[in-house]
Image 1 (cartoon, rainbow, N blue to C red):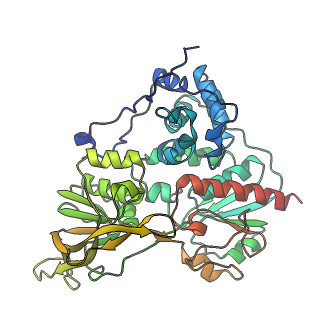
Image 2 (tube, rainbow, N blue to C red; image 1 turned 45 degrees about the vertical axis):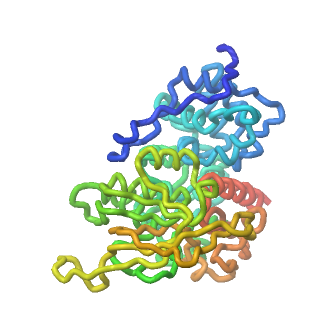
Image 3 (cartoon, one colour; image 1 turned 90 degrees about the vertical axis):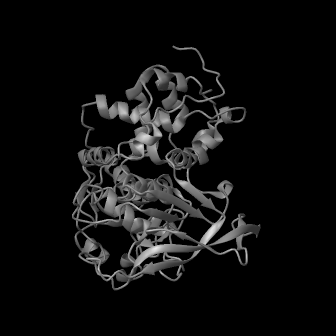
Length: 471
């Protein structure tokens, strides 16, 4: 075995050059080699109290899988991860490890934490490349469970139940399984072939996936129970975009980040002569500072934008997006306009434009400068407008990325399902809703959150459903 690596710095992640990747949709991060993965694994101290596991929403046995990497047994490492996670190749790419498992790493006290996410990605990619054996489908236990939505919470719940022998059917509204993993996260951050591979693994475990089924419209929860399903898990996500309510949001060229990313990621609008059009080129303003805002801004750049601004009302210190995504955006030339907020989107009408000019097109945005005041209820300094500081910038496209709310369709068509003021389904600590046999988790409960937190909710609900149906 190689010697312990006591370097204070983790092994860097190889990546495409910024000016090259800013104009293509290929994956930015290129992944560790076997040698680099082993070297990074040797930085792990193998702590007996495993603080990193406490930071993982799905409780992956992190020191154990890293120990197998040290020995060069990458398949054994994968098997350890897969006991806890149904989507290891996804999590290795999009999970905010720096705020979760890596934030608990002892090595991070006097240096950089172990690159846990990078090692998880390496192990999953190695398995997907070299392991050609199909997973063994468990023997059926005779119970049927339905899952609504094929996003991270739904796929996790389905995978965990399938491993226990349940006959699971996932009902997905779109024509492709994966939920936010396929419509919301860009190809350059999460290749869709990776998602398809993870979904295929679940199918081989016995999970059935029915696409083009809009539960609440083409099929109701009551009708699902009439089909002999004994429990239902709702993981329908948070697909209802939020807007600011400022003048000009109805102008052509104003998108929600959800719509913009769906058109690009799922409908492939970046291709020449797409069937689903999208605004390309010009100057683009993205309002928001989360991961979705970074994805939208970097996608706009790849679609040919001349200039892309991130508009965020707090400072860089409060920016909620992953550090790595912010760094990549800066390297690619995206400009961060901090401590400011839009107050109006200004439009123009061009009667000679072949498109319908009825509502006008975006030409500029008014913004006002902000300063940070007292702490709010969440412990963040509240942004306060600076009177008389309003100014105007020229833009052609505006993308609103200020959050989403839970899909309202299911709650409006399902009797006995209680929701909170934000539209999130109310659940107990096990994911059980106010209706017997109906569980929920992920963004449908919390509103927009991380992939790994949604997976944790799906895992919790799967365990509760198993206990419920085993009585």
